[in-house]
Length: 530
View 1 (cartoon, rainbow, N blue to C red):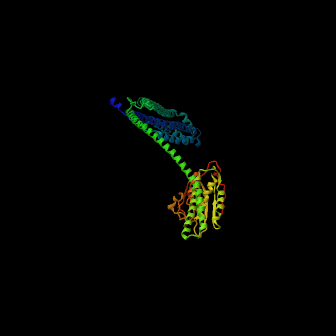
View 2 (view 1 turned 60 degrees about the vertical axis):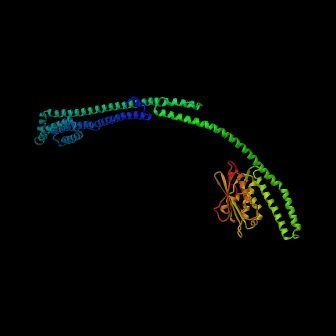
């Protein structure tokens, strides 16, 4: 692989190649470490599970043989059966420990196995040549003959057994030493593998740092310096990267294309900004003109309504004089015309009064105060007592204390309750219920009646000024009441709507804000019943 082809590698490819090589090395070292650790564990297991128990079994085997020699001598001297018990117990223990040693041995332990066989052969021969004849002598000839035989017996054969047992112990010790040496060797090899792994990791980290420094850090710092110069205002500066990985070279080209695009769009933005500034100036001028126009219209409506009062009163007064003086003196058509004039003048006077009241909402203000709606409903009930009659029922419950203008809120409830009384069903006593509930930062207040109700198609139309849903001869009024209610609610920062899903009757909802830290956050009024 040529150096030129390596330079064409991406940063990801180079890091992957480096990590792959390090991974392969670490994988090989890991396998070696696993094999070494397994070998060390095996050697430790041999020391713990075989060498130790073998030494104990060998020592116990020697003890069992000595017990046999001691027991047979004691029996020969005394002739007592109890003195023969160590001999018999020694034979049993010998068999037990020989079996234990054979169980612990493996096929590779040939030296120990040979030593064990030698001990067994010598023990069998000693019993056949010395112990059993001595025992038989005691049983047939008595202790004196047995003592003479003991004195005549040579100890060479039992000394051979001792030597064989010592040889067995030495072989077991040799096996243990070899196994311990193998364990130490495996531990050393494992340490060497760990050191090699640490070196591989260290070298990989150094190479990775060098790779990142030359292919990432330096090129990025150079690229960042060029970008900062562009950000400082040198939008015509060409951005390029002559070294680093192909990824960063491509990134520099992309950044330069972005610079060119931003420079082109910036010039367009400057032109657009000038146009927007000119348009904003025009809009500001138009807004100021519209504000002046609205103010003039409000002033005109107020002045017109106020100034029309005097001539209209004169027209109405003279029409009423004509009606009183000439009623019955002219023909019926003349009386009808005069009645039309009087009625028209009176209706015009009511319309102007209502329009004047509508225009005054929000213009003539006494400031917001804490208003107890329970007290307001009490005043409204007193005002409408004549219209309500004896059979009307007006109830309210849970009304809060809010911040607002008490005269306007009184007008609001007077119009709503008055409409409920006006649009009653024939021969049905009117029932009006006012309730309130708090939802988050506003009070939701409902005025519900059992009257003729409002069709859903007129849900928005009823709040428009001078909109009537019935003929003038059916119900009195100018059609401005709910428009005044809406303006009062919006002036207090609320909203109003008609609930079209109730029947019978009408249900109007409106909201009033809860002022933080004011008395309006607590419901203090009690239930009232009229």
